[in-house]
Amino acid sequence: MHATIVDESSGVKQAALNWTINNGTWFAAPMAHLEENIWYGTIPQLQYGTNVTYFVTAKDHNNIVATEGPEYECEYTVIPEFSSLIILPLFAIATLLACMIAKGRLAIRARRIESKKK
Image (cartoon, rainbow, N blue to C red; front, top):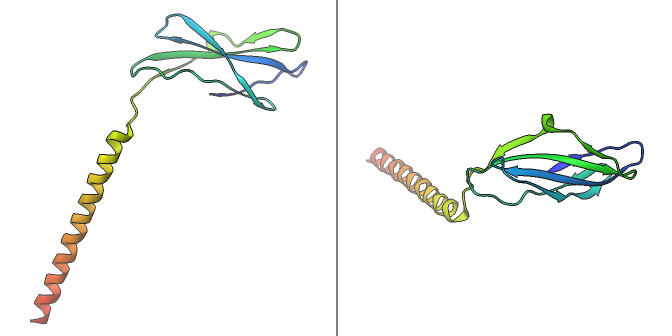
């Protein structure tokens, strides 16, 4: 996740992404400073159905830590992704059906043309 973090007095020294899984133990990971006020952090891949709550903390060059607190916590639930093992066969089936329909339409047109010639 990306966060815009601004400290106009001394600048941001470091930032951390804090999260909990299913309201259990809290974890924290340092965020990477990408450019200017943009910081980036990652929550590890989690199992389907997992509830995640997270927030960002930052420390400035005066060692003052800022946390927006619980009112700024964000939440999400992990949903399943379609793997390529599922998408590829579905795409192949859809392509095959489209070709069969197109071939059927061409055959119908060819029969109509033949019947008009007679």
